[in-house]
Length: 203
Image (cartoon, rainbow, N blue to C red; front, side, top):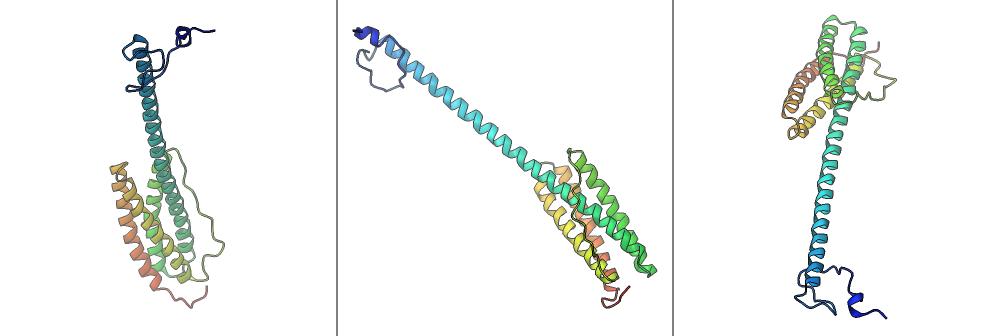
């Protein structure tokens, strides 16, 4: 049969204020060792929880930044596709004044698309092209109306992206806001050209 001393020879984990187990006097060295061991365990648990919280926040921040970059990749792809559309629609427009206006807007949007392409590739991703539409309109009015809607959506997306990036990269946020303002001007010009076209005309 084990002696009482043998039974309590293993370290006992206690916290400060815990009652002394049978066989351990309140002021005994064994009880002090047990309390220290228990306190060390608690401290280790707190450190582990703190580290897990830190890495959790880090993962959340990385995920948020990745989503912002994905949104820019989407805008870059849509901008490049808009340039393709405008270029095609300018080529088949028979009215010289409207044709020249579309070409000027296409040139400005091409410059925007190149900037967005650089922004996303520097962040290790690529522009995401939208699904191409098989039918873009039966006349100049329909085609330009579609281009106008696409341009308005891009401008809106750039404004939202500028706000989202403000706390992450203020310089990039400012550049996106500039692109959005330039798109607003292009949108006004494209709307003016669209209104010059006959909705009832057929090519």
